[in-house]
Image (tube, rainbow, N blue to C red):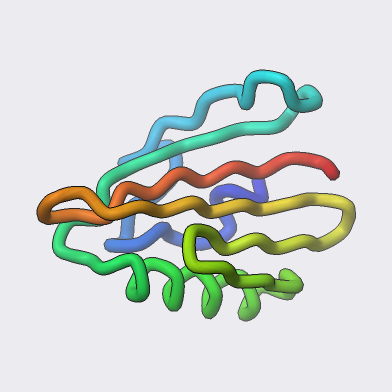
Length: 96
C-alpha cells in the first residue's frame, strides 16, 4: 500500500503503469518496481520523490544516488542512475 500512496514520476501508477515484484531477501510484503523516467535528470527525480515522500509524512534523507525515507517501521528507498535519454528509477518498500 505504501508503494501506491502517490503517483510515481511522470504520473505512473502502481497496478496501472508499473508492476510490483517481491523484493528478494527481504521480509514478506517487501516489494520493488522500476521504470525509466524519460527526459528527466537525476536531480528532477530526487526532488520529486523528496517532495512526495515528505508530503506524505515520511522522514526523508537524500544522497546523490538515492532517496531514503522511513515511517511507521517501513523504509522507502528510491535509487536512480543516468541512462541516455532517461534516468533509471528503482523503488523498494520494506520493513526495517
